[in-house]
Length: 362
Image (tube, rainbow, N blue to C red):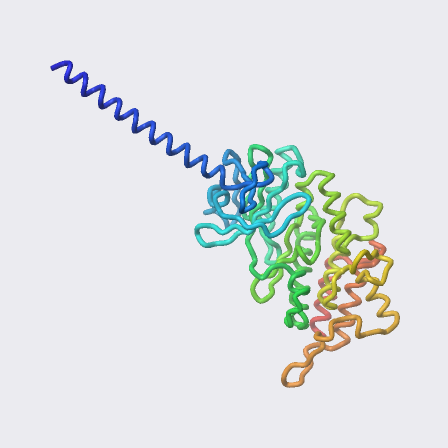
């Protein structure tokens, strides 16, 4: 009888051990599957979807508005590459909840090294909230130095695409004015509403995202604070190639509020003219460079070159949407922002006031 009980006990324990082994195996397999959902630059083995492999053993920080977001939501989401730069990759991520997020992967070799410095910058950027600034929803830091910034995704794309696509709406004064005012308000918040001014450092039309009714959101502000000196310099050089480099940056190594104002002026000129900041291998001394071309047009009184002709189109009832005087003042304000001398550029508060004056008279 005792032998029979002993046999039953042994069989029971063996069955329990086997079941426990199966459960542990399934848990390990699930974790491994999650770890393999991101791939490209962190791991030399590249998958077809082109998304980085990021290990799960990292820290995920959530900010206001993203309290329900989890690390698994982000790292398990299928990603589509929508942009690349020398320091990272942009993804459109489709979550299981049917929501869409914008993920920015920063290459470990391009970011600052000290964890406390990274976390200080991340907490600062995550605390910034404004209707015209793209919020930071979350931040993931992986064990191999991977850094992932999580932002909302805006389906209308960026301002550069909007202008280049020759959309009729891009020529309408009320939309030009609405976008310009939103950009200026967002930059005003960064420059004046915080304990210390936040320098954008990479302001350009590609970094202005559009929401419903062409509501503008300034993105990428303060990103240079997470990059090391080499990557920051490369970002500045990329910006210069695209036509946004302020003249003083040939001698200076760091951006300032004045260089932000210069870039803002170029963006305003893009909006009102419908032209690209730079044409071919031009430089700021050539007519192909947008601010210089507009200055020359003003000197020669070639008013038709100052703005897109669609800006002054009349409504169906024949009434004018805007006076030409208001448009000329808008062009002049844009050029003032692009002054070669930083001390002659208006500050962001002055720009806000001048835009309000232009709007009240248009």
